Length: 385
Image (cartoon, rainbow, N blue to C red):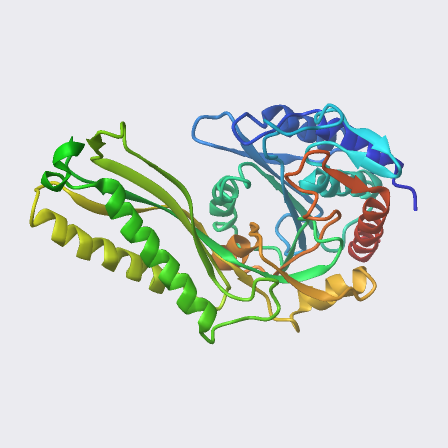
C-alpha cells in the first residue's frame, strides 16, 4: 500500500520545531486546519499560559466508545548533537527518513492523519477518536489536562493505542516514573575551621549512598519481571549541585533522582525509605545547627502500564498487526495515565525504533511507516462501512 501521503504529511510535521521548551501551537493549528478542511471538528485544550495545546477529534459519533489513537507532538532538543542534515527539514536517504521526531513520534501522527484523510468520507459504525498532546517528553505533562476533560465525558473510548516507536510490536507494559529533588542545607564556615560548620555536600552524599544501597537490595531481591530488559525497579541520581569555593564549607547542595518502577512495584515504599533517611539526617544536623537538614520534593510522576495479555485491546491490535509478539518497555508513555485515570485498556504500538529516538540523525524507515499504515487501514476498515 502506498505511504506517499503519510510521507508528505510527515515532511510538514518535522518542519515544526516543537521542542518541549517551545510552543507547539503552529503544529496544532496545522492539524486543526487539516481536519477542518475535510469537515472534522476538533477541540483544543491549552496549558495555563495558552502557549501550547492538546488537540482532540472524533470521526463518527462522539458519544460512542470506539478506538482512541494517541500521540505526542513535542520532541527533544537537538542542542549539541552532530546532525548530518537540518534536523527540522526531513531528508530521505536509503529508504530512511531523517529528522527530529521522525521516530518519536511524528511518524505515527502522520500515518493517523493520512488515515483520517482516507476515511473521512465513510460512515463510522464505531467512532475513531484522536488525541495529540504537548509536553510528553518532560513527564507526560500536557495530556493530563486533556484527560481531565475526558474524565467528565459520559462515554469513553473502549480501547487506546499509543503510537510510540515499538517497531510495530504490541507492547502491554511499561515502567512508571518518579522524579524527585533532595535539598540539603548546611552551615557554612571557613574551610580551615571545617568542623565548626555543616557540609551540605556531605549530607547529599549520605543520601546518595542510601539510594545506592536501596538499588543493591532491589537487584538482590525477588520482585523482578523478566519481561523487561532491565527486569527490576531502578533508582539513580542524575544531577548534583553544591558549593561555591573550595575554601568554604558549603551550606547548600541539591540532587535530582528518579525511580523507574516496574508496574507491579509501588514506588511509595522507596520514597518512604528516602524520606525516612532524610528525617534521620535532619534530626542529627538540627541538634547542632537550627534551620539545617534535608527536604525531599516530588517533582513529577507518571504511572506504569500493565495491561493483561488476554485483554480485548491486545488481541485486537495483534490481529491488526498480523499477530505481532507482545513486549514490555522500559521507557514511559502516556498510556499509564489513560489507563489509571480513565480506565481505558491501552497498548503501545507504533512505527520506528526507540533506539533512534533522541539521537542525532534520528530516522524512521519507509517499511515501518508502511507497516503502520497497514495496521491503521485495517482499523479504519473495521470501524467504517
